[in-house]
Amino acid sequence: MFDSVDALIAEHAELQVKLGDPAVHADAGLSKKLNRRFAQLSKIIAAHDRMVALTDDLAAAQEMASEDESMAAEVPVLEAGLAEATESLRSLLIPRDPDDGRDVIMEIKGGEGGEESALFAADLLRMYLHYAESRGWKTEVLDKTESDMGGFKNVQVAIKSNASDPAEGVWASMKYEGGVHRVQRVPVTESQGRIHTSTTGVLVFPEVDEPEELDISTNDLKIDVFRSSGPGGQSVNTTDSAVRITHLPTGIVVSMQNEKSQIQNREAGMRVLRARILARQQEELAAVQSDARKSQIRGMDRSERIRTYNFPENRIADHRTGYKSYNLDQVINGALEPVIRSCIEADEAERLAALNPE
Image 1 (cartoon, one colour):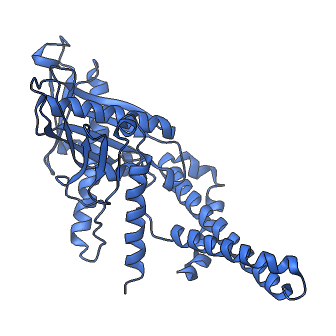
Image 2 (cartoon, rainbow, N blue to C red; image 1 turned 135 degrees about the vertical axis):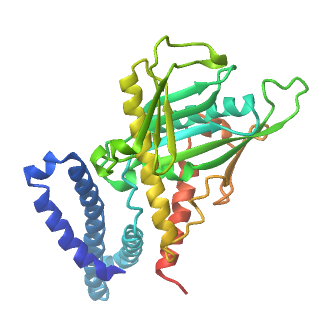
Image 3 (cartoon, helix red, strand yellow; image 1 turned 180 degrees about the vertical axis):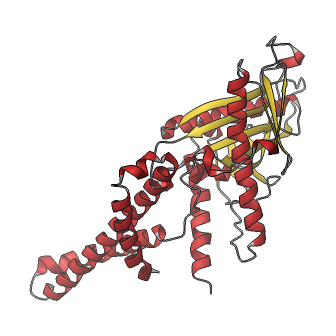
């Protein structure tokens, strides 16, 4: 595995030269892509340099240990440091998801449970907004359809990061949130105090960096405009500002009515459409690559039940990793990092195992 470092060092040097070219920075999409790769390689090289330095220090200490007690005492410390540095480099060399550095568009949809499901969708949205805030990410609600009791039948939100390191990208963490989220609690509509089980679906798509990244012909789009409406059919706009965009080759349909401007709704709709087309292309590519790694942590099946939120027991459980804790009150307010970290670690272990098959 470590044999590949020399090639990565050479690639890092080449990127450094390219990033010094003003023409590269004139292309926002290319600049972002190269900066992400440069940041990723910089971490690998720093870890490699540390491992090499510790190897040299350990060899020197072992050579002088018989003559110098202080050097002998340094040997176990250096051995532990070298083991840690080696494992750190090994982890960094695990092939990353090429989309880790991308921003995301997330859609939260009410599922089984009617109004209770819509209310839980609002809880999930708040959880993700608070988590994004804790990470220093920016969020923007693109579209929402409210329920009669203040929940969401459907809500779409864009989450963006300014980080150049792919490991700090939004997709690197949020891709594990796609699937069916199950909630167990006493609904506000329940008069007998009985615990109900409802589900809410979450879809997560990596966002296209620049519109030019995907070639979408205007001839492939059918665009309809209609009048926006709020909960219960109440009109919130007297003009045809809502937009429905259909991508004819794939049949993907996106509707936007959050803004009062038809132009703004169209722009937001195209952002979501590009993200969904990109996701569709990636799924098709994965399907034809029979040797592609099929992760147990993040599969393509969006109907998979991934997590249970049990309010009476204050318990949250992730069914993919076995993670369980009794601090649901904190998690639902944005303390999501340990849950996501369990997914990242399980995914990395799976990737590492794939590199070293028995």
